[in-house]
Figure 1 (cartoon, helix red, strand yellow):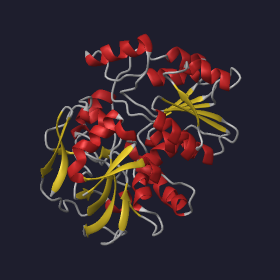
Figure 2: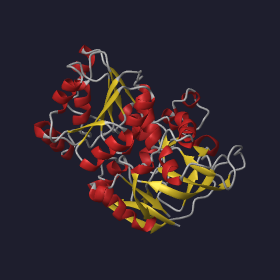
Figure 3: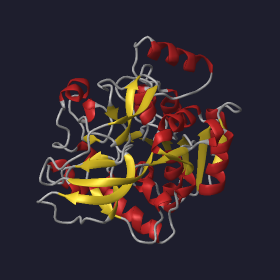
Length: 389
């Protein structure tokens, strides 16, 4: 079958790879209908996530049709249209039973790297390096889904593919960021990053009762989309001082909740950003943390900082003093999608969540390298390229 494969730093290629097959009794095989780019894929493309190998199939946000089920699968049926969570859970370990699915103890068959780096390994993730289990990704014609009963979810008939595909990752990740922050009615929320996850965090914050949501980015088309499609107030960090603007907008107090939806390749301006670029390029730190530092400094005393952006290892100049002395609550994690996806699909069926506007560039799988070029460089107003095999 055809698949979009990592071929080296900033190199992707459409290649022929073996068809997936049932390997374990709880597997299902899915014919991919739509598979989206995601900002965290760029960390793979840019070479910041180790343990990638030439020929690895990338992609983790997808929708498809079940075409084969293992003998122990009880819930899924051939012919079902399903959304598959990007994070793989086993459904049986202590963390899965506690609905902390991204902390699954069993789905990552190669935990050594993460145990060395972080003390413990996290769950397996589709198409996200051998540190995350080495699972083939979704930018392909077919994909094997382990533990199919707990990781694949039937899509209601009235929910369009262009909406449902984002229930795999962008919407539940954004929702989780708002949920773990404990947003309450009347809160003022600031969100760094107006990509797919950031916009879905904005929508979730409003649905949870936030009075105001202020979105921070630099691309005019994304700021416009965040304002017009999910109702955010917006700040262009290249035109204003973010900390001063947030203080002014909140009467000097600061936002109640700050959600960082950028991650390890955070962009910024000034000397601090130049410092981060040099440190990361020389491998003296693994992650650029300017937006995270801003979120911590901006948050009101006693507030909550929720970190959705993907970080791998180490951030220099982390403002722990601000976290401690301001009494902040810091929450984070890879998404526990299985906790949220059924609710999200239900809300989509009722018209409460519509993520279809994120799909700015529908493309064929053959155009995958070009799609990632547009997505990475923010060309032609690309928010998400979605590939149809």
